[in-house]
Amino acid sequence: MAGNTFGKNFTVITYGESHGAAIGGVIDGCPAGIDIDLEAIQYDLDRRKPGQSKIVTQRKESDTVQFYSGIFEGKTTGTPIGFQIVNENQKSKDYSHIKDTFRPSHADKVYEDKYGHRDYRGGGRSSARETASRVVAGAIAKQMLSQIKVTAFTSSVGDIFIDKPYQALDFSEIENNIVRCADPVTAKAMEERILQIRKEGDTIGGTITCVVQGVPAGLGEPAFDKLHADLGKAMLSINAVKGFEYGSGFCGAKMKGSEHNDLYNTDGSTKTNLSGGIQGGISNGMDIYFRVAFKPVATIMQSQETINSNGDIVEMQGKGRHDPCVVPRAVVIVEAMAALVLADHFLRARTSKI
Image (cartoon, rainbow, N blue to C red; front, side):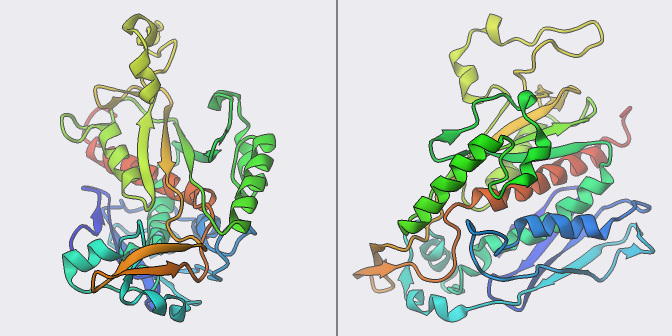
């Protein structure tokens, strides 16, 4: 299986399966001398870990990370940073009923078709458990980019949306509710919706908005490594993501050029920011903002028809511990992947005037 490495200059390779002994990764390209706050890394992992509230999977994992190389006396050494998170609460028997059955809208069948063999315990490598390793790498990228602030929050659950621009929101509210919404009134409605969906044995999707502040002008490598293109790839690599838009996004397709153009101020900033902080694939110094769409979790606690390995139509029902809505736990994953992209592009630009 290829495709387990992300980045060009700041890279991370992840390993492990949902119900294996451990997951982990190796970060390469991180410069020496970066102060590392281990508590901040663990804090981000705690934001992603299962069992943290009544609206997420009740799998119990401490998600405690152990570092084995690349950090000495609180600073990076410039050598590869190796880390691992032990899986503590596997219940592989919850998946014995799908050993020879393919769950609808999961990766089960395509993995079987491609590799001829799959780890059916929680989806193996296709499980979102792999994203914990991304969070570790992203937390280190954030500390490398101390002048840049990456903030993500839940902006919709189903048909419940925040109806304010991000500039009107108080980001300090994000961690004050279990949905991780930047608006407390909307957060309450979202929470109630997720709880109702869980009672129905169903799941629901939503969106996450990410705002990146303090990005210098000049990050991005046209033509094929445009900054927004790499951000899009990073977000679409996250489990359950179905859409990505930055700046004006699809709304921009309804506008005229005279409405959409960001006119300049004398200092080089722009009066509006429909470009989303990126023009021609290069950051322009304005806020970068984008939205990521997540589908409903595919495992539902309702009976559905599917097929088995013999091609027979069979009936199955989800079992085990699953999120009714993945979005609240995915907020920190979106932040992590954004930070990895920015760290990678920052290192590419180090020899320029930035």
